Image 1 (cartoon, rainbow, N blue to C red):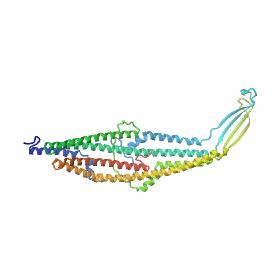
Image 2: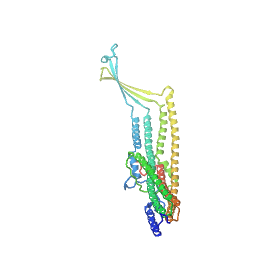
Image 3: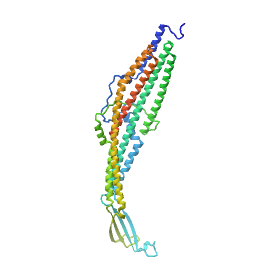
Image 4: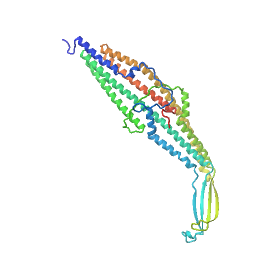
Length: 456
């Protein structure tokens, strides 16, 4: 007696042909980028020379996001206005001290302290304080150097946010590709389910194979949900960086994903960072301000001056007919054992030493950032080349062979699931390696003090 699920040999052949139809559709459903990766050469990118490509297509690319970042990020807006505020200080310090105008009633009769109209005479006084020459100009220069340091720090903040934005942006692009891979995995597993169903009906596979394929498909669906949640969170982070509401419907596009090491050797990139990075410039401005602060503190030992011009009139209470003039010159000398001046110099010297130490630290951190980004880029490019040239083509070939053999009853079901899982992991690895390489490239760009959109 035949098993209920058995078929006539001719019918069995027809069912096997039907089972191969979804298998053939699987190759058509495979993204062109994944199929072509086995034969395409390693992508290349011009040396690190930032440019602003034309705006094309729908959605935001990295350059357009950076433009939004520069114009709308609240941290950058705060930094710009802090600089403008600090830039208003030097003119105030350089301007002369305000004069003091006084009026004196003389010889008011005894017993009539408020009878100013009976005063015997009156005086007009004009007092002007004059600091020792060079003090005000030096104080203004110090404030100007500190303001320019804030401006350089503003540029350094922009580079920091640029590195953060580029990292988040390419992570979002990688998540888009992961979502596509998960959707394709679900489609492949649906085809596996159909083939397994036919084979089970033909007594060529166990029902557990169909259940396992269904479980794997459900697991892929859960992975798709997780990737979609992570992608939505990444978009919210990007919206926050560019100064928009987290719920803004942001759409991303990737214009060019080719990348390779810059033509400049690492020592040249290090020297370039020491010349151009805003953090180095900000530290140099603070060094200049610290040196000038020591000079200004030593000028505190020098005296200041005061000039008093007096006009005397005998026509009180508000006489305007002067009958004599007086000029007084006062010298304001440091007193009380020069304690304030001595400790002022000590404070300025210690501050200069601290600023010099900070300058050394800034240079070390800048070089470390360049070296780290360069080495990361070099390693990730090697990994990307391995994934695209070897791992993905091998996984794709293994999956094709195993799928064909399983459809023709020449391979075990576990081998098919293993090949399918390896192919999915290879595709995910390529997507993540591409994103990591681009993140390292832009981290190197920021570490050397440049970006696709230069500070205006």
